[in-house]
Image (cartoon, rainbow, N blue to C red):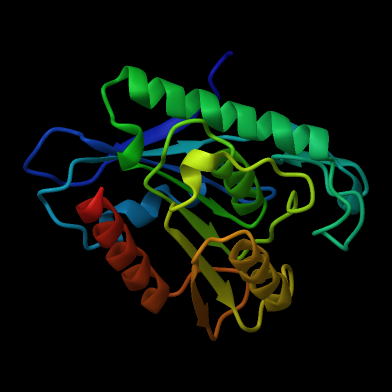
Length: 223
């Protein structure tokens, strides 16, 4: 499978790369959206982390009158946790699997690979990480929803995967109720996700950046 184009960055480190974070952007953005965050993450210099920010292809998006924009899948109706193009979402998850496979080929242990995503990217992250055939380090789901909750076939090797869910209490795009719904579904599947909420809209805030760095540090320290 052809790999998606992506931005790659490495966190300041005193050691060689030994972990990877694949971070998916939201609707209408691209890999540049979260790349500037890397220097702001206070991560231990003893961690050698490669950040990968892939670019979604540009496709027509129904809720935006068919306007062509970067998207991991089409959203057909505003009730976004139910009316998505699941075939396109599964294709995007397969592209993430290919990126994970490439990291394995580069010598990274699967247990030191985190899959992260914001909004649409978070929905793909749930599907991609929970169905991957080798154990991963964690899932970071930001301002998102579990679009494939009713159809996903979870890989048994992911039964203990750490999951961090972050959501804004004033999010007008993806209501926080969808973040809480994702947490409840994951709990019903036997997972133990961490849930963090912040007084923000559909974005990131400084407190969240610190919490993300703390979570990454804990997850990779235990990997």
